[in-house]
Length: 511
Image 1 (cartoon, rainbow, N blue to C red):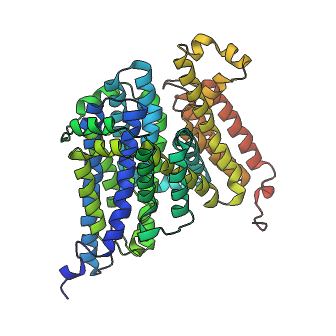
Image 2: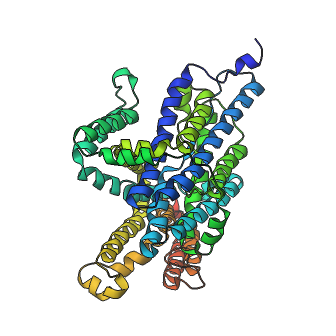
Image 3: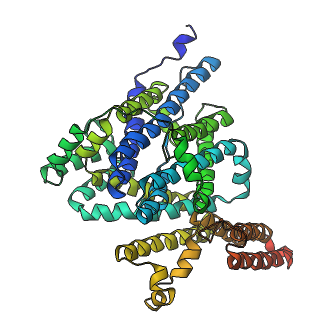
């Protein structure tokens, strides 16, 4: 048998893999686009003319590369069972960028170009950190407890990913709850549906049928989408990046730890692929994910990409190389040939949102399931800054709708009504990094590793002093009071490390 016969570009198992990965990618692109077009009210020419082309270019090219990488590995090792790593847009991040970066800027200024510029610059910074992370991710992973990383991710999952979709589902429960039931049955109970139709696809189809049959969906919107059909071409967005970099400072506290999470997630998923039998070069695979994010930013996308979880699953259903390149081609066709606006006019957004609720449930559950039970307090503590940040955003939106703000109304007046606004503002600033720091300190204390807890507290002091966390802006002494608090916390922990050190050996016999 020739070596070429060992690495076909398409096998029967790629059919299952394609429908799974392509449906996943298409759903994410539709959701991200729907958030911008319908929830934030960005103009269509920006969403479909600039953002979508850049986004699908980054997804499409990445999938094509990973297909070629898998074929190259198969040729090198003489195996016909090599499976490409799955790849796509990062789900938590498009929600965060939409509702914590671009949305607030657009709401405050009414300037969609400024909001988009900051989002693209945010993604550009994200890409640089992802690329650097290919070389330093291992160190960060070694010094940070898993509960801290997963706990802060669970915070964003439960608040900014799950809460709004959940509330929107209950606004149209006769569509949303049916779709949610299908998602829970298919993805949690792993119950198969007739014809082995994927649960995500069935939920979208069921929601679409109910939406049109009930009159919730309107033919006028579909007609407008058909009338506005156009082909989009990716256009470089360097001017937007340059403009956005002038205002990126307050958002670095989110970009940096989120990018760290992305490259760690990519690294974990490369390791997962190796455990399943496909040993890819870790640095190369992570670099491609970072470069994919960079390509998206350069062509106007504010949303980062990463190596997806699930390689062993796709391998087990027989997917090899074809499912990857076919997904890349399919996403490019949908995004560049004007099909996406038609799909969004045809499919109710509320039929897609239960998928985000599911993602929130999975990430929230994983933070407890994939960590020792004794670390649960650290996970919960990592959630707290996100809750503060979420509530503050809800308060801000309500005050803005009423034509006022917290500063105009006064912190004392809000406190008198039971709203501790100033505390929420400080605690929630840089929530993802704050959650990671607090979670790590708590985990180290639980494990009686007081010296390590003191080091993380000092890290929190440094971040606070420069305004990376607990402050809306960067600068020397930007959050000096929290910085002092972290220094004193570090001192307490260090003293416990040297006081009766023989007591610092943790007994784990009960676990």
